Image (cartoon, rainbow, N blue to C red):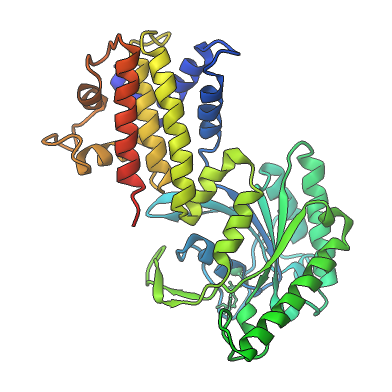
Length: 398
Ligand SMILES: Nc1nc2c(ncn2[C@@H]2O[C@H](COP(=O)(O)OP(=O)(O)OP(=O)(O)O)[C@@H](O)[C@H]2O)c(=O)[nH]1
Ligand SMILES: [Mg+2]
């Protein structure tokens, strides 16, 4: 019975929550408890709000950050429709939630398809429903001086609404200058060393300074503005859904720096999901190690306590959670399937049929006495071994 229940993702989380609740506050396990709790909180993709004029390169930027073609880059006509949180996925797994507020300049004009009176209302509905983790304020480098004041005024009223609705939340605004390859002189190389290249970079720096200054002039934006950064997002991708970036056609510039900045200003408990989205192995590994260490400590501590209301071994629940989590960090789904895949493919469960493998198999492999472990040390060692194997499997260096 327990196994059936545990096969469901939420049941694992419920079990873990029960285990953590039983641990007395202010014990020396508190840090590990907190790390697991914030790990659980982070189990949703990051929410990124992208504001910018039509054709400024918002969709291209999202793709460049993910390193995948998740968003449709519009070729000629600006897309219309209501602003809503959209899920972008890879391989059928949710990666990131984007609120794309297209065409700021048109924001005041009513549109028929939308039940809300104006696009501004529909943006307001979306942000009432869910607050953004981070806001990217996008402007095409060559349009910095092209009447962006009005755009910024609209951004300001949107940000004001977010602050009113989600008063207790903190969020950061990052200014992103896009399409910097288009800044004069035309043929210069963004990372090159000759005079022309340097002239291009100086021009880009000028654009960044102006952009930053313009944003700062808006009071509501000033306080949340962290940095402004120039980028180029241009790249070609494989055909089909969520195609991978083609390395021969990868002209991205400064995107890694943008992701670093996003990481820096994202609350700690949300960094894992950001690293997952942007495929940053180093951060994924750091977060995985933190979760693993916490799980090892908690597994050792609770190995002899039964979970109230079930006869499942707490160590088993913690190990399952840990493997699911490390798999999730690598971009898989947070599910039993991910655990099965690891057990079968990594050779941990040699000779076991992939379709029938269950938690009992994990227990047999890693717990000296499946279901009723009695030694804290053995539980910790088994969990450590499993965690290391999962990190090696899901987050191996390329
Ligand atoms: N040269 C160059 N072109 C870019 C870059 N980023 C985007 N583009 C091009 O700019 C055009 C618009 O890009 P999108 O990403 O669709 O712009 P958007 O802001 O999402 O547009 P809407 O969804 O219509 O509001 C496309 O033709 C892109 O290929 C860049 O960094 N460099
Ligand atoms: Mg777009």
